[in-house]
Figure 1 (cartoon, one colour):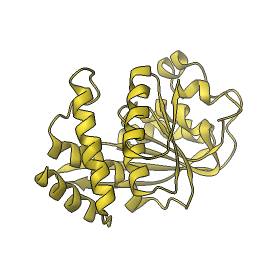
Figure 2: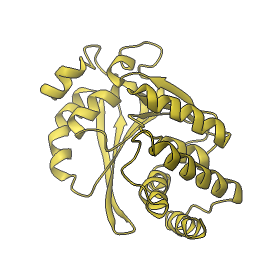
Figure 3: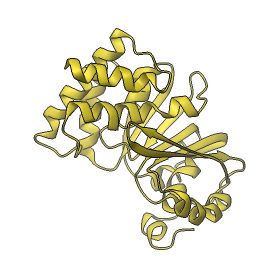
Length: 236
């Protein structure tokens, strides 16, 4: 795993992240367990350790370079899958409070196991974002809601913005071609109480990436989020 470690350290340095030996060990173990689980259950299409280092770990942590995340911030990772970006963020910033949300229970089982092996404290929820957005215990309760390439932005906004507290941020991690998607989502973002703050475009190695940053400027109307089928069929 020497090449994995070199690629990971070099990749993180480009985003001003200096890994400690403890953090490096956690990422190495994360990669090993992920690949073992992947043999019996499809968690990632990326199966080479060197690619996991860049396309999952470095990519997940890139937002730390572009977004100021306050100490002890309360963050939910919507549609986290195998834990991206939530677990890598927690490895780097142990102070933040991370909740991992996914609709597939097998992924939740994996996330609970990996967090135990890594010795990190995270909360996991088996459920759907639109249900949490209507739940008083979670609605407008997070400083940051982050999601990585889960759905088109006009759909994703209705899943995520209701969970953001006023004054917080919704962060969508996307690929390079984001303009049309962002233009389509602007109306819905405003209806949901958000305001487009910035779109950051950069590269992770040769992979074009975008981060869409939305500020929560007013409360989300109680009619949102709608049922999941309505969100998909008739986006705002």
